[in-house]
Amino acid sequence: MLTKTLRGRDLVSLMDYSREELETILDLAFALKRKNEVEEEQNYLRGKTLAMIFANPSTRTRTSFEAAMTELGGHAQFHTPEVMQIAHHETWLDTARVLDRYVHGIMIRMYGLEKYGMARDILRLMADAAQIPVYNALDDKEHPFQILADLMTMIEKLGPGWRKKKIVLSWAYSERVKSAGVPQTMAIAASLLGMNLTLAYPEKYDVDPEYIAFARREAEKSGAEIEINHDVYQAAKGADVIYAKSWGSFLMEPQEDREYRKRFRQDWCISKKHFELANRRAIFMHCLPADRNLEVTDEVIDGPMSVVYDEAENRLHTEKAVLALTMR
Ligand code: CP
Image (cartoon, rainbow, N blue to C red; front, side, top):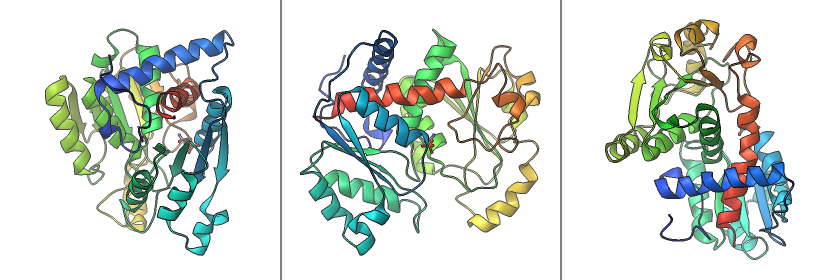
């Protein structure tokens, strides 16, 4: 049971949430998914507006948030910095203070600025400036809404005892240098919820040490097992979930990283070879968009072990749960 309401809360980092709060969000997401099945109205946010600011491209996040607001009886607006006065150097602070007077929540996707952490600083500044909730729809550090959908999918697919199943979140080859938001947020969630998580990645792809330190600290309290393995085949042994995700190195500039990673192209493309080492009923997960035949083979992502479209669908239900719980 929650000891205090989530109404008015930002979701910038999952580190700001407790195990009980995450479980409340997931419980409501399941309830809302059932309501969709029976076409029950869910107008909890009638008359409410969410301003969505996308500084980077999106298919799932934009569409699912927009649909989420519609299903909850509200409305979502799509903005990009290029067509806001941000383009003429209006500050993010003034932007937040003004939006605060019109809408009931602000969602922002922003990553890949000059320096790691800059987007997070903007998100925090806006969250402090606005009375309304500010939501992180992917920055350089975290992708909280993706991980909530991933957790819901694992609960559905793995059933009771899901927390102790072996989840392998594996770095995967891509030509694009991507955000480490997914592995970093998964480490937070796993440590808060007492999960068994292996982060598999080649040498030099360590995630931000702040996240590993948080995960190790929380794991002591929750009983979570957080492992790191640099051998993808060893990591895949006995896995119940293999989740592929490419991310960039913190130790190399993007151009150097693109060259360095070529040596991992073959072994770190998740294929049948990896699933032969995993448990018989192991599932494949990916947050999408996937770089097919680079991060994962067609045979796996289109195969019976793949749950990627159910995972994508769960973005909608988990987002609705957060919006319904936090917007006022
Ligand atoms: N997984 C995800 O965030 O997808 P989009 O980039 O399409 O929003």
